[in-house]
Image 1 (cartoon, helix red, strand yellow):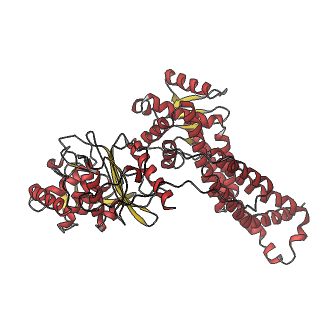
Image 2 (cartoon, helix red, strand yellow; image 1 turned 90 degrees about the horizontal axis):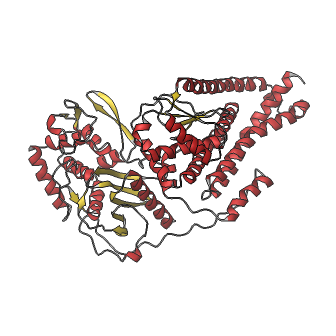
Image 3 (cartoon, helix red, strand yellow; image 1 turned 90 degrees about the vertical axis):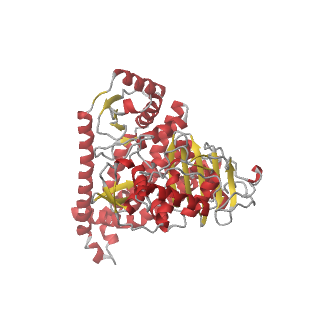
Length: 581
């Protein structure tokens, strides 16, 4: 068989794979949707089978076409003449992708060489976890300071690399949960699977379905490892807390390779949500049907999912958004969810209906939710947003001694200070906004009281612009009114509804990130958002979200930790989505 025949056969196989890959992707998407409520193992199997089929189809067609070149040259002889150029372009792209893969392998080798053995105590902990998982291969535990989190390397000689700082910065039980996650990858030979997956990406780099399947497969791989490790440690909440703690640590990570299996991998927020609020398992027929469909045909699928269970009906009670609460509906008419926050209210802003309430009229500290009021007072004054403000020692927190990224002497515009106060909850920026208000801090305090009265708030008291003072108090109901009022300010909505932004500080751009990690996350459409935390207030969250096309205000006060606040918000969103459907 001539080289020209082989090139022509492979060229036609690549061309045909354009539509074949799209068809495989469509079937895979349908199956993944059908398996949405099942174990991640099933979805991982669908992704792996689909990716294998993507590689098998062009190889099979190439072998079929190579001996009979004349059969496919006929009417498409003009296109056939371009096959050498097409195959050459594919070869060049594949070579570049294989070079990328080689760089990843080099990173893995270098990381292993640069690492140092972990203390014997921690190696013993890892060995005990490995025995509990039934692992017979020896797994080494090594330290590499530059990493952002634990990663797993190797198949025949697997090892777990750990940032040295985690040994002192994470509690033992949380770190063990992360190590269990990495050992789950070792037990499943995920490093080898990831390597083969990267090879398929290199060979079929030109097709977007291959990249989509590969990314989805990596995400499901992390979910499978989560399931295994949660079973091992006996508490999915512990693993969720460990992942959340890992995400909140300050890191300056070294560049890593996609070949390394990291605990921070996948869509971290989705993983935490699943661990804290597991979805109901699908019924048996849903588990069997995808396997039958794949066995019967890879291209024709006819299936319907069962209707999802409906959430309880929304109540009919009314509440005024901007004033004192109307009569709260009987608890039986409201959503009943096992939330952690002690004070909760959920309001349909389009109708004023209270969808959920839990001790919503208790007066409690509100921490940095105060900054929504601070922003409204500043914007009401119509001050020059470009005016330069200088951070002084008067803006330094002497009450809680909270951390700040803004040093004394830093200059920024009033608008930049507003963005930092709302997005990053920067206390010095909020204090500077009040200090530079017309009439100084006394003038700001007077304007704040006027704003509280204008909003009809009867149980809200504000004594400082940052929320650090426990004397800054309100109720969940009145915080909903404050959030609804803030949503009428275009600047507040613009600033708090994005995940990150750049603001000029001392004449140089600085990236700031939203303290609400739900902003910009998949499935969330957040219009206004503000988080808060002090020891007295607990973890707080006030936001307006879109449930379909309907605006809904959610207020959570005094949750026990960021992970629980995240879980509460996820439970509420999912319940609202079921109700809307």
